[in-house]
Image (cartoon, rainbow, N blue to C red):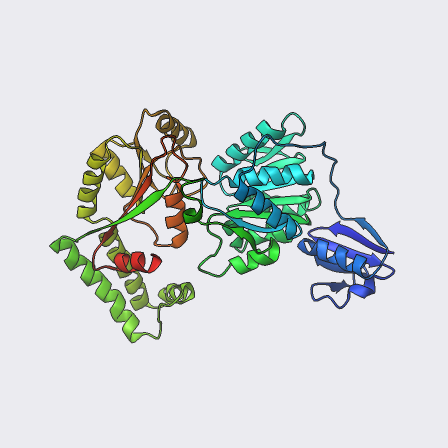
Length: 450
């Protein structure tokens, strides 16, 4: 009989018939224990191979408690039900890509209720940790204890919410405790360290949730191996009107002042001159990383990188962007507005100039919660932020977003658009303004993304 056991992030295979697995590329011989081993995430494939070869199996990999019958009061929308069906049709593995505000959490809770197996939910931020625990407590708290790892609490229960950081630190310890893994904002799993969360855990069922799956560095391919490929996706355009607010994107161009133009061209020229005489062509993220590596030993490469950074600061913090923002705020005096920038210093400048509460990575959790609560109640009609509200925070309804600057990535843009897409009680339309400086790299990035 083939025996399967969980052992420190691996599946240990021994017993009569274990040699039948030797042909599998991910199974290796362990001379020390006279057994075979496979990465823990390969558990369902090892198990199914044994069954397919008619091998008797003593399977004691998972050490999970029984859960009572679970149900949810949520009524799934048609596209949520289709997503759940597609995921189940993929052997309870895969990624669902849906825009912000479309109810990915509801879908995941429905999946937990269907499987009725101990579940670990992995999230990127403390804010999301608290939000998920609140949702799970409301749905299942009277039938199953809800645990938490992170935010000062270390409590493991049959249904547990954890941050990526906490899960990374305890993955091998928890690897046999759960049958279902949910990765919220699953694109974070592409980080080299975080991948170990999925590698070291044996849970057969895996669900990834995201609004933007593909990563510029190609790391989504590693996620597909660990969680599954995209089994269902819908765009904001497809859901607008029926399930999300109708929306429009307005791209506004502003000019640099003569002084800004002179500084921009000087810095940009230093950067492009270095590229012209080097062998680097910036066609991908890896090319840029090569430039960063060179800057460690090449003073000219370092000067070029600093010049690129200075040019970026000039174009993204242009004075006429602030003037254009003033016009937008006057035009939308009765609307609920979120302003996004790339720079913390600009957040505080705008907060002081327009008397708008700021939220940055320097804002304490309690203060941020208070600002968002007041925004939700209508005490504040505007907030300004640098990246913090892009994801991982439950942002109250707003109908206007203003993007003054950002990284230029499609993911960031989609996340910021998602902050105004929740359906409006009055059926109104959401609006996103993208303010870009003309004749700069920012204009080219915006055009390419569109």
